[in-house]
Image (cartoon, rainbow, N blue to C red):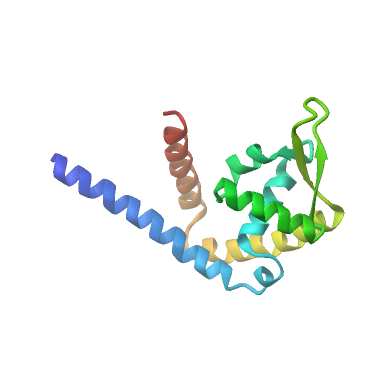
Length: 150
């Protein structure tokens, strides 16, 4: 394959991945459950729910969500004012602040999560076989690992 053809294939593959993600996300955002909590707010709640200790530092949360640092700080403030997350001082570093879900935040994350998973399944099962989903998972994981390894 020529260098030009290789560049074109890489660019077209990237564009296809990006456009597929945007198309699917637009469809998922139409779901009524995201009127209760926005998808970016849900992303914060979801990442906090996955933390084994139940608590994350703001910079750790920032590493896992699809927001910029200033946006995540404002989001945390809004979620805290809604009673969905809480803050506490880190015991190992009194200057550090940890963020965790409240009971209301955990309940909302589970409620939205169940509906979100159902919506994802409906989209994925129509488009892809189980084998194709495994291949997609393998390829996207490989791409992320390659970028993270730089």
